[in-house]
Image (cartoon, rainbow, N blue to C red; front, side):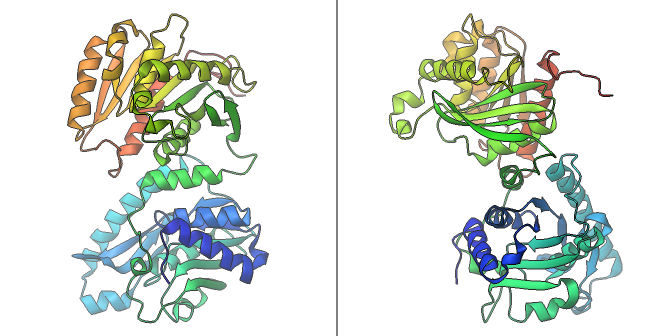
Length: 434
């Protein structure tokens, strides 16, 4: 059996769980990021379950990082595969050095994925631990230990693919096991996938944002209709402002990159509205893709509509634009009746709005990847033309899509800082909590 990708694997795993263990509806789904997150998101959606993560890092053999000699996880969890350690002859100091590196990365990812939120409470509940597959089982064993330590009453480990006899090998690590496929001649998890590209941090955040926290524990998400089409609105408690994400060509409101940035903004008490400037099929009309006047006009109109929503009334607002969406924001900001508090452009095309840049007095942050040389030069030239406060931030080594490790997180932090700094106090802003 071959899975198209992790989302396909997640849907097939969900179907198997619903067929063989329907009592798992209402369980907490806990993903092993990164690869397990898109699988678990599909499972949680099908089961109507809460989704959380359990951050675990494989400790690879020096020089052979794909071979696990153990694993480390949150809450100090540690698993040593002594059989591999002895077979390869890894000295204790080499294991300790590898473990220290993985714990450092584990801490970074846990902070990023949780964003200051506490884990979903597991005490007395059934927990479904999900990964994209099991090979040696070291990471899965560490995850099961963590959720048991957090009070889970029952632990079920579910994966799309595992080697024959995997449940026997893992023994009492979990109370139940389910794999969609256990192929003879199992060699590696990736061999069962047509697309097994590395999952990015942005995709993990998007999976968590898509599933959403329990109703009382985080931002309220909903869909609204704008003149440009459907939009996704998320409003955290006591919002200090709202950021409207303008999508031109090459991405849409469902973009994992935009959703990852939006998830970070929610943790800073910033509401978000994600919408498209182009209707389905309009991207084929290339003049519309690169017409900043058309896109800017639509952005201004959509903003007026969105701000009439009761949850957003009276809030300061800003625009986040990528590529041609950035040109739309700059074009619209030059209109006399335009009043955004701040603009952030990610990998933007400010050159398309060159004629209006001197009229833009809105504080504008331009974020560009250091490896995106042509776009970087356009942004340097644009900054020199802007009529108000501006800054250019270069993310070292990042390309146009900011897919490199840590690049999108840098974008999110820069954007959040810029908006928080420039949004004036208002309803929900700078309030004193008693």
